[in-house]
Amino acid sequence: MDNFESAKKSFLEGLSFLENENFEEAELKFLESLRLLPERVSTLTNLAATQIKLKKYSEAKTYSEKAVELDANNSEAFLNLGFIEKEVGNLESALTFFNKALTLDLTNALAFLNKGAAFHELKRYEEALGSYKKAIELKPDYHEAWSNQGVTLNELKRYEEALGSYKKAIELKLDYHEAWSNQGVTLNELKRYEEALGSYKKAIELKLDYHEAWSNQGVTLNELKRYEEALGSYKKAIELKPDYHEAWSNQGVTLNELKRHEEAIGSYERAIQLKPDYAIALWNLALNQLLMGDFKNGWDNFESRWYKKNSESYRHKDIPALKDLKNIATKTILVWSEQGYGDTIQFCRFITNLASLGASIILEVQPPLKSLMETSFSFCQVVSEGGKLINADFQVPLLSLPLLFGTTIDTIPNQIPYLKNLKSKSIYWGEKLEGNKKKLNIGVAFSGNENHQNDHNRSMNLALLRPLLRMGNLCLIQKNIKPIDRIFLNSNREISFLGDSIHSFADSGAIVEKMDIIVSVDTSLAHLSGALGIPTYVLLPWNPDWRWLLDRKDSPWYPTVKTLRQPSSGDWESVVIELISEINNAVNESI
Image 1 (cartoon, rainbow, N blue to C red):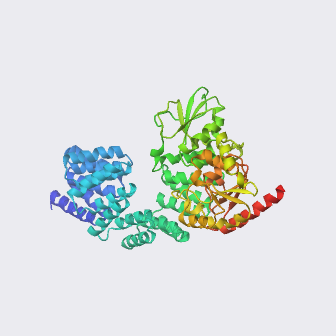
Image 2 (tube, rainbow, N blue to C red; image 1 turned 45 degrees about the vertical axis):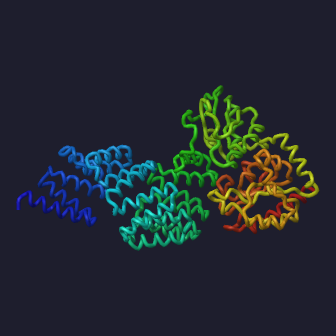
Image 3 (cartoon, rainbow, N blue to C red; image 1 turned 180 degrees about the horizontal axis):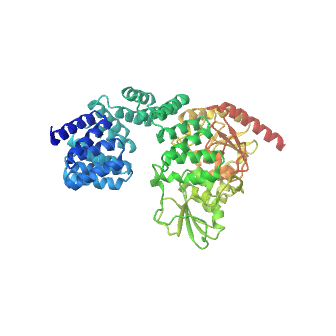
C-alpha cells in the first residue's frame, strides 16, 4: 500500500473515531495520516478539531495556522482558530475568525453557532440570538443551536421562549442531555422547582458523569431548602470535575445557608483559585467576609459587584473614578446611590468624612430620599437619580466609600443622629400623631419589598406581632401591605396604617421621630430609625444580611439598635417572645 492509500486509511479511521467521540484514538490516526501526507489540509483541520476537543489548544492552533498557509480560503481552518480563541477567552479575536470563516462559506452553520456562543459570553445577547437564528435557518434540525438559543433567551429573562427552544432541541434529539439540563435551569428561574429536578434527573440518566447537571440540581435543591441533598449534588459534580469552579461556588451558597460560613468561605476561595475573575464567587466571598467582620478583605472583594451580570448599573462611567482620598481638596466629587434605600441611608454617613477632606460633594440619591438628604447634608448639592448631566472631577459609588476610608468595625463612623428631619414635616406629623401620646408609640415595619431577593426570609406576617397590641399604639410605617396582612389589619382597626400618607422618606423620618420605639425587620425603616438615633429593635432571620454581623445583640453601625435573631430558620415566634421581654424590661427601667 502506497503512502496515499495508507494516509487515506488512517484519515478515514480518524474520522470514525472523531465521530464516535474517541478523541485520543482520532488524534493518533490523524497524526499517522499527516506523517504520510504532511500537507493535506483536510487532515490538518480535522486534527486541529480533535485537539480542540482534547483541550490541546496550542497544538491545534499550530495545525490550523499550517492549514491556512496551505489554503487561505479554507473556512474550516478559520473556524478552528475562532474556536481556539473563544476557549482561551479571546472573544473579540474569536469573532474575527468566525467572520472570516463565514466570508468564505456563508452556509457554515457551525460558524454561526460558535459566533453566537462568543456573542453570548460577551453578553451581547441580541447579536447571539441573531447568529443562532442564522444557524437554524441553514440547518433547521440543528439541536445545539436551538438549545444555545434557549440559554441566551434565559439570560434575557424570556423564559417561556427559552423553554420553547429547549423543547425543540429535545424533540430533535431526545437524548440531548445538555438541553434537558438547560431546561432545568430555566424552570428553576420560573420557580417550577419539581419540574426542574425532573429535567436534571433526565439529563443525569442520559449522562451519569454530567457534572453541570449535578451542580444545577444542587441549586434547585438549595432553593427547596433541601440543603444536605444540595451538598450531595455539588459533591458529586466536584468528584466528576474537581476544577469545576461553578460547583465550588454553588456549594458555598448552600454552606452559607447552613451558617457554615468558614466552610463557605473556603468553597468560594477554591472557586476563585480555579477562576480568578469569577465575579459571583468573589461577591459571595465578600458578603461572608463582611458578615464575619473581616472588613479588610470584605470591602475589597465587595467591588466585584460591578463585574456581575448587572454591571450596567454602574452609572457615570464618563467621569473619572475616585481611586483614593489623596489631593481631593477643592475637587468636586459625585457620590451616587447604587442599591436600595436602606443602603443609601446606612452609607450616606461617609459623606461628612469625605467633605471634611475639603472636597465639594454632589450627592445623587433616589428621589424619595432627596428632601431628607438635603436637610441632613446641607453642605452638599443633593440631586435625584436620572436628572441632568453632572459635572464633577471624580465619581464614586456610595458603597465604595468604606473601602476608600479603610473602614473596620472599630472605625465605623457611628455618631448619631446623622440624619435630620425637615422641620415642616416634624410639625405636621407631630400634630397628626398627637392623639397617640398616652401610650407607648411603637412604629412598625414587618415586611419589605417583595421583589427583594431575600424577602421571603427577612419579612414576617403582621399577625405574628399581635402581642404588641397590648403594649402600646401600633403605627405601621410602610407603604405596601400584602393581602394576608391586609386581612389582619382590617380586623384590628386600632392599628394605624400610615403608608397612604407617606410620600417620601421626609415623612417616614418625621414619623419615626415621634415614636418611642421602632420595631422593624431588615428594611430601610431599621436604617432610618438607627440613623435618627431612635431606640430600635431589628428582627432578623436565622441567617442575616451581612451588615448585621453574626450573633450580636448590638450593631456597630447604630448605637440605639438592638438585634433580635431567629434561633432557627423561620422561627419568628421566638423572636417576638424575646421582643416583648425586651420592651417590658426597657419600660420598667425607665420608670
